[in-house]
Image (cartoon, rainbow, N blue to C red; front, side, top):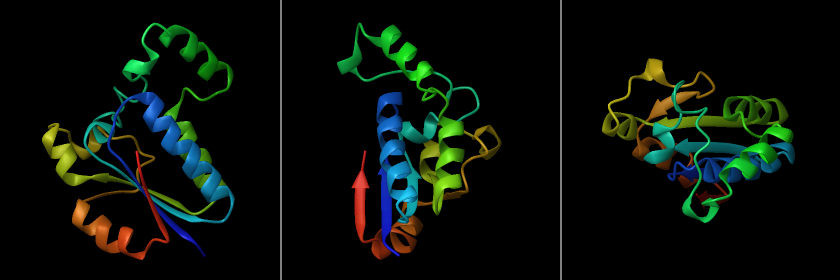
Length: 137
């Protein structure tokens, strides 16, 4: 089985969604996927912030329209997207321990769709070093 490691650092919703779209395709095609959310991306995975659809600068002035399109396509609920990915294939979602410490977060604040909290070094050893492909967002 092919293995894909994905590291997501940027926290804008369009970046998170783009990463998830790639992972959804990979998992559905039989690729084993491991995804690490760190830095800004990790900070967005709390119960409070995951529903905030913020976008990168390239979307300035288009945010309302993009939110409408995402809602119509049922792409505005990141936890549901993560659950769907898991339902389609072999996927594991991790969040970086250092990143949650940087943002003063507690594990209880994170969404339940995350499988584990781990340090970047552990993700490197367990996932990146074993992967056929590594992608960053």
